[in-house]
Image (cartoon, rainbow, N blue to C red; front, side, top):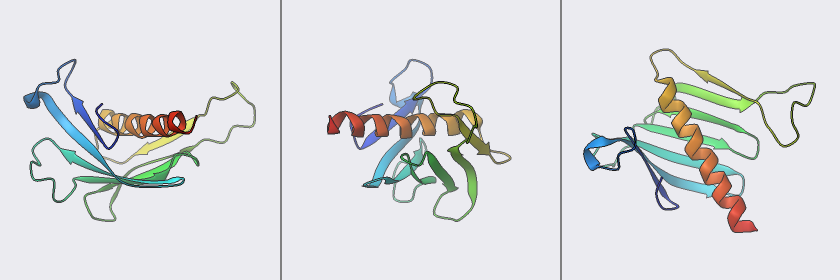
Length: 124
């Protein structure tokens, strides 16, 4: 992960350019809402994102769209549980649509979490 407005995901422990899988740019962060643009490694121009993430980490929800379309490829939301498992721990439900890489979606959600943690650290 890199900087505060751009994050990069690589294969394994590498940080070599040829091992880049995708990068994420924060396009909007307003109070509790966030929008991310995700670019696959072969999208060098980065003029049109390969995926968009829209959501609210405060509400523990987001939707991942394919490119600039309205085609949903994954969704995440807080799972309501009657009993509290652990104080301060959220259970999240992630729905990944067919033909979408689960690991990719988890990595994007981890970046979203890191952005939220950065915001919390800045407020302290």
